Image: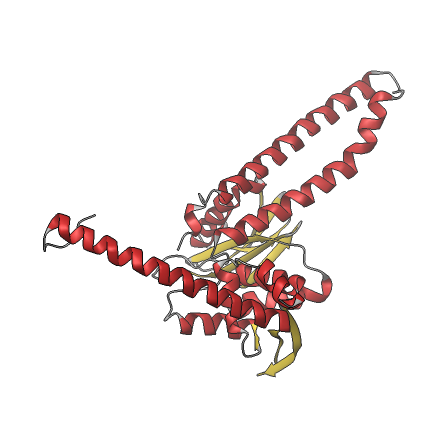
Length: 128
Length: 184
């Protein structure tokens, strides 16, 4: 395992907000672009507030997972653009693998629970 | 009754109670008092049209170079910077029909905020009180004024420790996921 891979594994697990910020930066974006991208990807279900976003960006910069990639000027507004570093790219790959495995294992358990519920309750809908 | 254009309200808030402050500022806006300047121990308001406004407070002391970046994110997200004092940034946005918008959308970033604040308070505590504590063991001038001064210092020390404990408890509360008001 390379040194980058090892460092990437050590950065895991990420908080939910940090994860969404990181995956948004697979294409370089400014802060506002990240907020819009996360809202769009999740169909509006996940919103990242500016306080949370600033904190996530600061932490990711400090950890070396993202880097500044210049400025973008639109309609007179100057915004900082961020992009993934090599380490950041490995972290996205590892985290995605980890989550897929967890989801796969979870699905087996969830299917089994549904089976058990329907055996217990018969065909009616499960109540909470 | 004559209507004043501005008014000053003497008021301070406990660091762990910033949500209460946000609600109060919202009520002031609803009564037509627009926050003009927070000054730590007092606020200045200007008379304005009553408005449904949501206030949110963030504690951060961004470096000068990152300040534009920090405020820019809030501006992009629709928050107006209404002022700042002692690292507390006051943001406001018009209230909509849905649930109030949040600047912190996960418990982790709220916890981080109080952690940073705790670090800041601790540093001030150490910087201000180290000279005092070293004098405790050394010689102190006698006399009523100095005794009164020592009592005053002791009371302030107790207050400071109280603040440290309460902010520390706030961090622990958020760590345990009890930050109910920020849950999605």
